[in-house]
Length: 498
Image 1 (cartoon, rainbow, N blue to C red):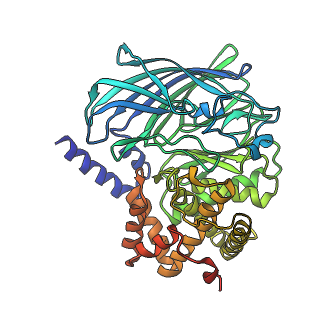
Image 2 (tube, rainbow, N blue to C red):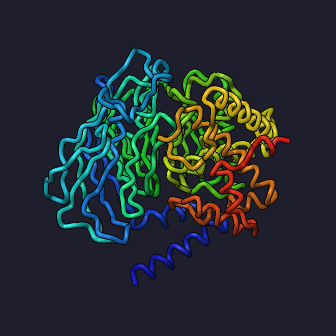
Image 3 (tube, rainbow, N blue to C red):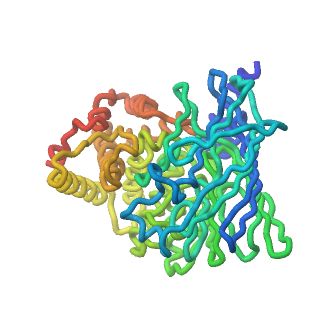
């Protein structure tokens, strides 16, 4: 009866969500019966360390008993001991580290199941997985409280996790449960190619104590903030999100705007184009709301920060790198990273196995943005033409240097030989594939495909089959073989350019 009730309840909520009423109901509906992370942490900004206690009310959503639970320990990718799953490769080293290599890592000091302290194991080639045995087992649909005490050393590194001249980034900073699917834990390690992250929807309550002269920007909604001596303690709550990230700086200024029920904040320093960058952020939310489906969260923070790549997405928060100095490129990064709030944030996928699902599709909707917004001195067709020309040039050069090019898109990020190969096979070939689908089904039907995919797979981890099924349903066309020909590399792009 309980399952029956929740099924009816979710159906009612989703009807309201997608009919344009009660847009926050999607979050409320999916925040029921998911795992919840309660984290209490203290940041020592001077020493660049953090001490925390994390309690996870973990629910077994599988159909089998679990005898252990595994957590990713992503900060160990920044350790001097990391070999296979390093966060930074040689080509990025000088851009990442302003002052030569700086150590970063996570240390687990204690684990408790309920009221019992238990023995745990740090596994993986780079000590990147925390394994917690459950002697009595955890049955399907049952909860278990897991308390993890840990500490961080934050590296002087312009990365997702690290600090630079202007800000301190806390991305992928705490133990996060691995996804369990196909009767095994998905334990892919860090990668310098792309975003090696895959997680389930969960709820978060995060309390951080930090130096009072810092501004904290975070995933979620601020519930309270208290000043005590030289420190501020802020409590944030985030319901139905895939991750929880924060950025802190003493230099931040902020501009605010409203798009529907969402507050859009732009945090920045040294930005003469701050007002127009806030406007771009709002334009992106407005465009994707109309094109795909309404953004279901109350806040979106766009944050300028020190980061070695163009940008990075987290729920309710995106990094925009201060190394991007050309205004048009900076705005393009804003649109792309906000696009990820739909593809990765609301509709999840395995970013290690199927990077094209979020990166290629986000590149595609970023291209569509330009025809729907005048004044950006760019058109959708220009973006697509540039992508095709760039891909063909890349393919020619790569084959000349290496003799052959594997054009398959369905590859784990660790299987790409270089970051350049990864970018061109996921981002660039990805945008071309989705444009080719639009040519087959028509542009209006293509947007129906995006809407169907969003509506059907919101708050879930979608597979390529899920996406194809949604596209076929919305377009009334058989697309499986066509899409698979792109993914397996049998499409010859030179022919498409004529």
